[in-house]
Image 1 (spheres, rainbow, N blue to C red):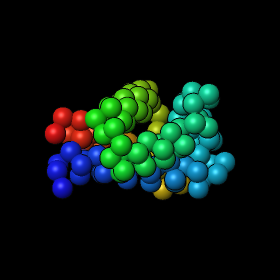
Image 2 (cartoon, rainbow, N blue to C red):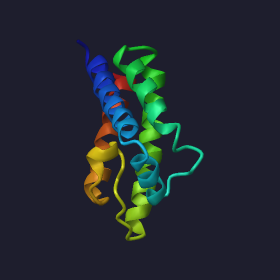
Image 3 (cartoon, rainbow, N blue to C red):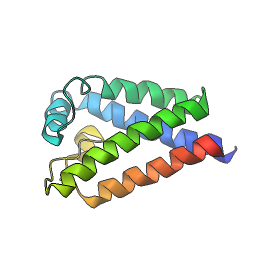
Image 4 (cartoon, rainbow, N blue to C red):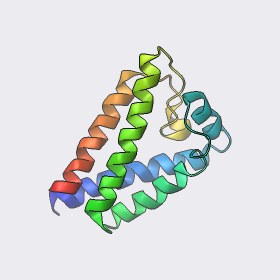
Length: 125
């Protein structure tokens, strides 16, 4: 297995888990996303985009372009988290639905930066 395939699978599994956990959280996910300050129009779409994108990356479909899309999503999520932390706000992360109900911290940023690095590997390796 090549490094790019492995990296793509790691990003894909992370997205599948995140999207699935959001769907499983039911109405708690939109409430947490609102508290985090996610744009309302995007909230119902995020879990399904994560699931579809994650599945496609696990299946190695259009690996580089889809890993680029995952990288862009992680970057947007990371900017939102960084903004909230800079404001001194610590709502639940909500990144992995009910699995991530802990208050937002710099650890969440570190995790996202690591996922971004893995997405870059999936693109360029």
